Length: 512
Ligand SMILES: [Zn+2]
Image (cartoon, rainbow, N blue to C red):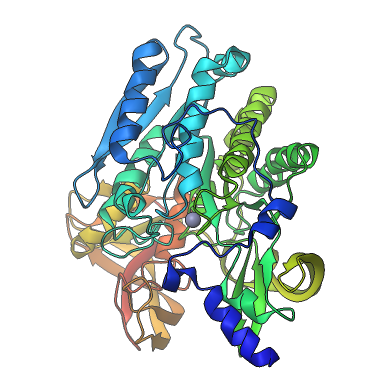
């Protein structure tokens, strides 16, 4: 009988099939009561049903711009695949001519995370209309992309219209929106960045846990990079100061929080991945560009308008806390980012996550009590490097690699072109083990390689490219060019290779 119930519950918890809110009213009232302190000032909050559509968003933004023309400007970054202009809102009080910290906020990168866009609009409204926040603009300027994946958002669908997940696309840059957003991010040179998301508290794996399934209890989860190639001082300041202050705010407002977790099946057993180090997603990608960055996941996917104001409040308080922390630590932020550029570390090419047993609180869907669930954790925090490599002073790519050079420029790197044929003593990657995954991930055939580095003198023809690594965004460059790195052009199959082949990416250890 239990098995039958589990199967029944499994389907009950598959809202994608039924298109329904999976949350019993009892769970909402016991754990996530609505919060009426959020004012009805944004388009969705001003109506009883549904979410903000594109036209309503633009009307709202233009109204704010007209009322605060001295503080607000709106620009369009480019077009979504369906032809919608992607707006970015800049808020900057030019009355203060001192140097400021540049902050980047983004919502709606996944189109079915409806509270994230609404939070961006709410933040814009409050920063402009609530005089108690005006002081923040003395030291901060902010760029906000409220609806990053417009096509997805208008269908309440996670993906861009070509089916790609824009938050797995930060290194391979295969969706037009990814290129547009990354170019804007690189040009803006954000120093603090926050990507607003919502998560599904009724994951399929959760239906198999407890006696009748479980649901996540956290109002919000924080994802900040554990990537070992991020400057260590940035990692410390992000975790202990920025996210640390948000944790205090959440405690004060009795909102439940945790570090980001997701489930994954390993050899038939469900494990919890905690934290993340993937350069393919925003928090790590931004941190590798030397910004203090995080991604937040508010409990909201598939919940419709349930606890909508509570979700907005949770995300709004997080955004506000990041701004306050920036304001109160202006010098420290500037100093941390400056020092990050000169910190020299060896490259962590491959690392192994930290595995341990833990217990987390979940909602028991049998009786709606709190259950202590024993779990196996694979933690990105505390990961150990298993393959290390020296940093080169430059990489050289031939003319034929122009399609990669375009992506590298989008990642914010300067590229030189050789004006004459030049001999370089370079390190080459020889593929000694190779595996190509025939099933596709994000429409790509993933490759796994092991390489042997061999030094050679090679004549590079004029028109070849050289990219120096003494640049701000060099940490992103390593992630895409070192073949074994998990989000590299080779790993993602953007640059195809094979056994016993030489990969056409060359390392220059010493520039003469
Ligand atoms: Zn998301």
